[in-house]
Amino acid sequence: MSDKWWMLTLIGRDSPGIVAAVTRALAKAGITLGETSMLRLGGNFTVMMMVSGDTDEERLGSLLAPVVEQRGLRLHIDPIEAELHQHLVPNVQVTVSGPDRTGMVAQVTSALAEGGFNILDLESDVAGTPREPLYIIQISGIAVEPVERIEERLAAIRDTGISVNVVPVDTYIG
Amino acid sequence: MAVLEILKLPDPRLKQVSEPVTEFDDALRAFIDDLEETRQNGPAAVGIAAPQVGVFKRVVIIDCSQTRKPVPNHGHLILVNPEITHWEGFEAGREGCLSVPDYTGNVIRATRIHLEAFDPWGNPLAFDMEGYEARAAQHEIDHLDGILFVDRVVSRRTDLFRRKVYQKGGKSKKG
Image 1 (cartoon, rainbow over the protein chains, first blue to last red):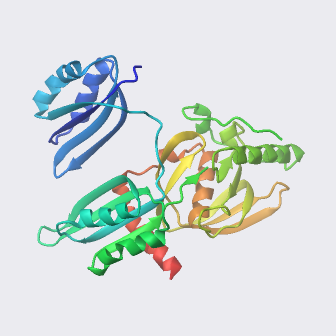
Image 2: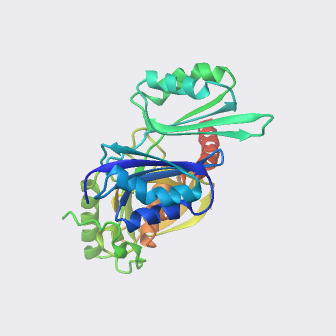
Image 3: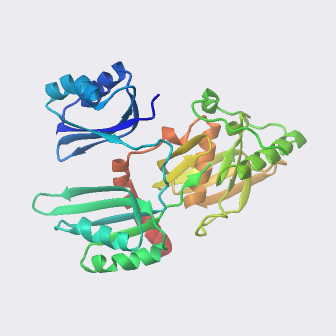
């Protein structure tokens, strides 16, 4: 396997079978997958895939062209510097939820960034009802300061009626 | 004493169900010494189960006394023929495994369990465990039944719902 990696980003209207069609086209051409992440965001299909193989951007584009066209997707290809087996293990989880309002993610992540918190994973979602939307943010990452200190950093956000939970993550290895 | 080789996925032997121990003899205790040495040799392993070193006997070792922040625990435990006789609650927590390098994921486990087992001399043991230690016991006993944590990993989105329950549990414990 070549050590050269590309990041494929595909988005479009969601329908069953997109992942199968995309990965079949790649597999047939001998392209291997690295780490991938598919999410449905607001009814849209989204996937990011590390791919590797004896290929180039043009060839990747052309071998995915049929499925991209048939499924009405948009494809983006970037050459990337990448390595496998570089997983970092989070030691803190932060969950925030409250009435939806502009700037919540910015406020929370800025407070975390000030303390040198390295976000490994962030997902946010709008739950509740259209009339009363509830925004939920779930973050896991590596904290370099104690949980109590992170709590203090987020105290101002909690004071505005938003629920904030900071929990240490002790990964069990056995 | 010797450090034994750890079986790693996709080794099919990890899916094998282990047999109960019937002879509580010196051979068993010598094996347990090796298993312990292997656990300590591994990177930050809290627990280990006999089938992880290719010995398909119902023996596990856990030691939850060395966490970053202290958690309720019963110290260093050698559990022969362990059986969980009662489960309560559930919570998500992150797990990894000596047999699955470079991968961690969230797994739902019972919050509180009652566990019965034998020590290496055949004396009966019984413990009420909670939280991290209960997780350790469940993870290791799974190995005895040929189940790996990757068989139980939940998606991040599923976890979002579960974790809210988990945090309620955590708060009431502190209070």
